[in-house]
Length: 499
Image (cartoon, rainbow, N blue to C red):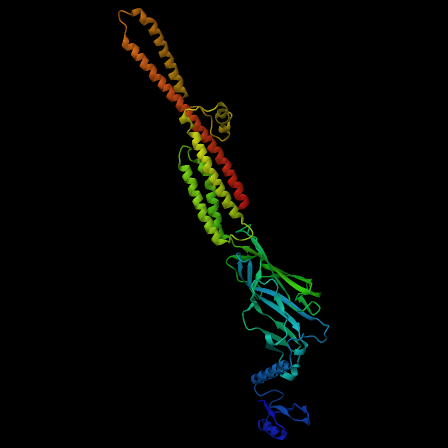
């Protein structure tokens, strides 16, 4: 058991030490001789009662480590750089390892991540002889009591400093080598481009550098001794595995780190910068069912409006319902992504385009409905319109509606023939009846022939009116089919370019 004696009377202290010595051991007594203003004196000494080792290995190790830490920190000045000459630069080797992607906020353009930053350097003030301290090869010291590299995040998003997730300590070995592995939660600015939402890929950068030391004072390199390196993530042999984020995933499971130097107006010497670039890809499964799928279905229903028969007024009601559904989806989309962002997502353009097509379909449906009822006004279809839309080589055949011929044309021709026959009979009766003036003129026959003529004429007029009405309705049907094909093509083009 070690006993530390501190007295001017050495003999008394020596006797105390001997009182604790076991007779079966070979003993070594170690004196620490110090000088004072009064000359050489035994101010303090320590004796150990074993063969060069303290009694009880565990107690001895604790004592040696205690004594070593006290000695290392007794005259240590953490503000001074760990160099032997003022013109020397401290060589610091670094390595980055991601622990977790915390968040990527679209509204504030902020990227948050937890990561290890492995930092290694040598401090000649923290060397010791292993044999003098019972074989202690390394100790753990608080980072706030030593000089550590002042690597900070330049593009920090918040004013608050990075949050450390545990009490930071460094590992110091007997040759002065120091390893410091702080685990930090960092918040950096990340300008986002949301045009391809929800299939977007964002590139965020973490820019590190010394806040006070130039490259001539602190030389920062990668542990691999290269100027560029890939920080591979999620490897089976990796010590730090990246936990998957529910909304974002790392592209190719790796980040890219690069060293560079930059000069500022304040200082003639360059500063070393470390840029860690991370590509993040959004997981689109949730948004595919929430926004993209309903938008595609509603967009497909826009040309279907033109398949509803022209005379029916349900077409306008159908279009208004589509507008209402699109408005609800826009409200849901606004909750998913901020609308005050600098870039406009393509899916928003698709929603806007779908609403424009829906409004156009409602307007054109009103026009086609009015065209279809033009026959009610008994206005015949112009010949040139009939040739373009209803002729044998017209749009009707191109859109697969077949040839057009009024169904009532046959009946109209038969009635016209019958009407002509009745006219002939009436003319003959008018020629013959005057010859029978006094005798047997049948006035009833004359009245009957007049009524029959009126009825036949009325039927011919009705059939002609029906033919006119049918032509206008058929024109509306052809226009509806053309608009259906046009709007369907517009939907395919819009969906393929924006979704």
